[in-house]
Image 1: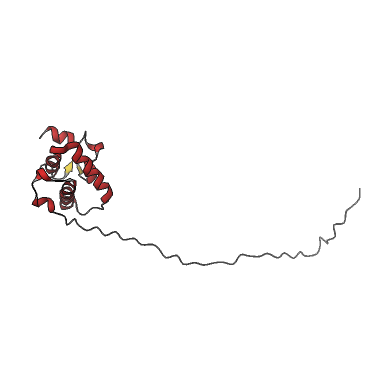
Image 2: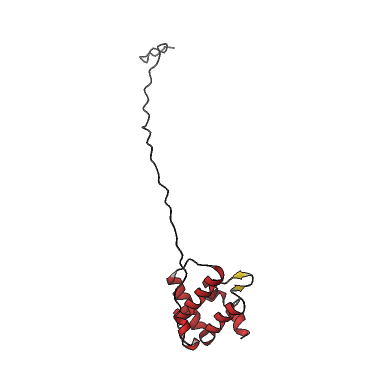
Length: 136
């Protein structure tokens, strides 16, 4: 058996050079987002007979009643538009009466939960609008 010489002296101290990456410090400013919710100012529905209310009047009535009982809410005009147009189409003559009963009789609460705009969605009809309409 023969020894192979690899050209280095194992008994000599080894020199190791390492390169550290430079430490980068960066100050990150937190993003603070403030949502200001202002109460609804629309009240045009009060000047018109209930039989002539459009979806905007119904929406304004419901939003004002919700805010009066539960405080200002974060709103989405696009969603509100589709909800109240659909509600008025589905319940036509009874739509305003259902909304009025939900606030004037039930004080803005339904099954121990505050009434929100979403309560007027089609998915809530069997548990909300249909029950009120049956008792009108």
